[in-house]
Image 1 (cartoon, helix red, strand yellow):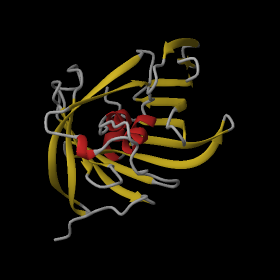
Image 2: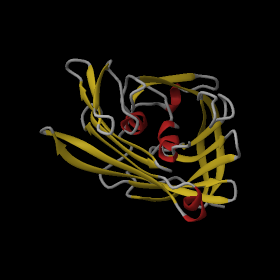
Image 3: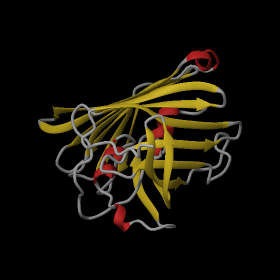
Image 4: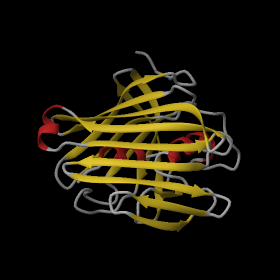
Amino acid sequence: MIRWTVLILLLLPLGLSAQQSRQSFQHGEWLEFRLHYGVFNASYATFKVSEERFLNKPVYHVVAHGETTGLAALFFKVDDTYETYFTKKDHEPLKFVRKVDEGGYTMDLDIVFDHARRKALLTDHKKNKQLSFDAKKGIQDLVSAFYYLRDHYQTKDLYVGKFLELDILYDDDGVTRFKLEYLGREVLRTKFGKVSCLKFRPYVQSDRVFKEQEALTLWVSDDENRIPIRIKADLVVGSLRADLNQYAKLKHPFEVIHE
């Protein structure tokens, strides 16, 4: 089955730099993506950022939610929620929450990160079990990775054909090494106007969902916000497209090339 919110969250611009760039997001930022499967408007996915305190530390709390709508919901209902708490200073994840309901398939788990001990404890509430994983420096959860990478990559370090990687922990399969290839710049026509983008190819495992390893393409805004603009996926059956549909409280101006 296709996990719609996971699809967006995994397709992130990976370009790491030892020197942290200017912060790309802020309290109150909200992004909405509209997903299409063939002729159907399949679902929406949203991401909301807030500033809070967690474990007596100042953190960003992000809630990501995805659900199917319209005719798609009649065939396959999806209602997924993901949350992360990560430190404002170092962008280290402290807790990750994943609650999934996809056509009768459900999941309810959380991961607590202990960076001092380089460990992460996953609690699966549905299966009533706990698993411990090694958590090397720099590890992220599925949602925190989005925001960490937006603040820690430099476009000047990218060149066509460069491969970029990051460790992510988000389920009981353990740490995933995510790999992405930079393909260059491209201007896209969007509902907002023309947007200059950085183009990437995330590599995925070819299986019953994705047609091949090169089945995904991602476009990210080539500005200081560094937000996904479009995602395309060639699936075993049909194709999927996700577009930025709405946004609010971006930290920097959204750069659009007007006609």
